[in-house]
Length: 225
Image (cartoon, rainbow, N blue to C red; front, side, top):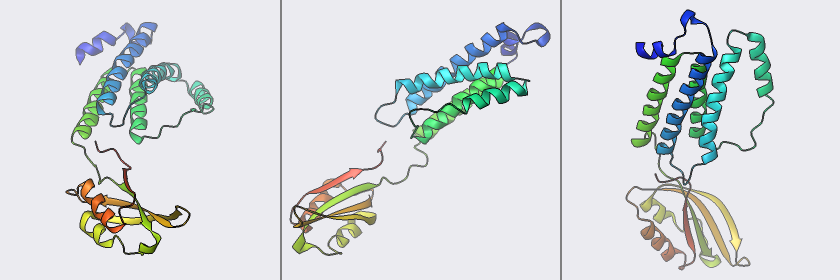
């Protein structure tokens, strides 16, 4: 760490352009590491390249802002007032994406205050933590499925699938009932959580035995990663 401090220390301890450039360069490197961790731990179908670029750009910009506002409360309030007027056109829907944005901003702020050791430690510690949480799948709950069952009107009764749910699911909740096919059939929509050893095909086959072999669909609300 002493070597790192020597690389970024300026004689007399005064803030210079060289030190500011060093802060931006370090922030760029660390934010790239953050985005690499993000790509390795992403669990959706496809991540946005623009989002990856945004993490890097915002981190560097924040490091510069911290250089400007450091020790000047008036400038700080003015800049925050300006940023409060900015609204993002696209909402971030994944909570983990928000965490990565905050991660990048924190590294940028720390570097902008010339706390280079702390910025490096934060990047590697939090990056390793995110990666471990992803690999061990910490906190993963049971997947929730949406089950839609079409039933002929003459077979319609409340407990038609009760024994099937008791055998194959941990929980089941009726969410919606609607008529279809000009009112001759009823479609039930359930939110269910299947047992770990339940096979999708076996469950669907048992339901088809109950609903006169009419349409049954099963969809997953969460990724099975």
